[in-house]
Length: 240
Image 1 (cartoon, rainbow, N blue to C red):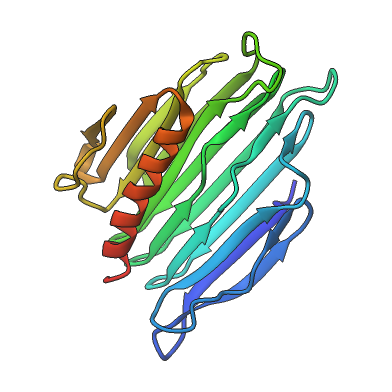
Image 2 (cartoon, rainbow, N blue to C red):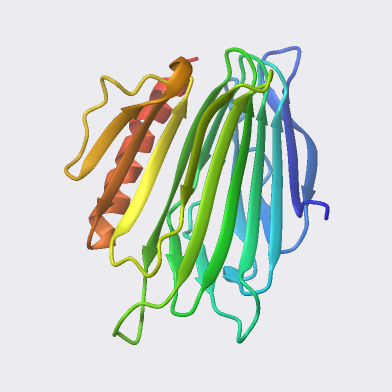
């Protein structure tokens, strides 16, 4: 199946990054790059379907050519919704980041609604000198109250262009009352970053970077803390 979202960024002769390939089919919609100064291309990613629905299969493929700089922002959290007796929804996100390129992929935590089920996979390839800042997470929301009832299976695999495994994670939370989020920094040093309450920091193998994990309830303070962390690191990335 071809991805519904396919984007490719490449630097021009003037050093500015441009969107050189763009395919955005339903349910995705994106803005044109709206950073007109500096090297960074900044796009906003939106969903026009109201979230991820049971039975859907969604795929994204984002490519950065060597030296490109891009920031993909998803300002609204994505709700994962039940669709009758449909099979779990599936979402795959493939990121290919060329040599000395930098990508900020900023999402808000998934909102797991009652009865929702999602299988999600991140597949990341990083060339020499590539940098990736990736925010991801989930929280539970039950408008009617009572016990939560949802299923999420999420995995991440990151490897070098030569095939060396840099990081792998597999999680299968079931109706967790906690909000959880992670900030992955491949090729980025988080060691000097001040951490909010409830956060922990780990170093990735092979000098690949760092990851910060956050967990807590209610979800509001966690989401605010994640946004602050992303802002701090983003300001540093834009200086590259």
